[in-house]
Length: 80
Image (tube, rainbow, N blue to C red; front, top):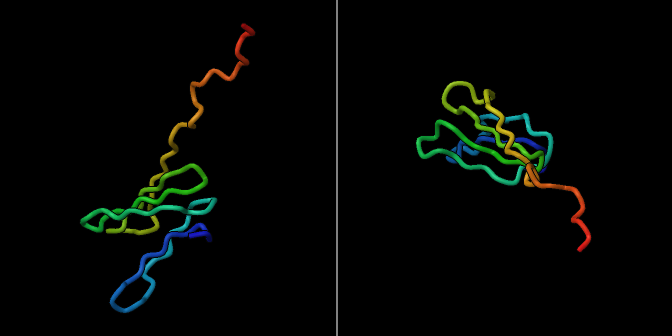
């Protein structure tokens, strides 16, 4: 969501079960495991967060993928 949270809902009752906080920028994707034990969210803060939905939904692991430009030589090209 644009408010930097992931919300877990009971679809049958329409009740919000959890609000997962931790991202520092807008969230643009969420996937839930088939067994509903974990969710993964991705954000414009350049992180993926893996949320444990089975025990404590606020527990999560942060994954910081390497920059798209990591390892790229940023020096100007020599004149030909």
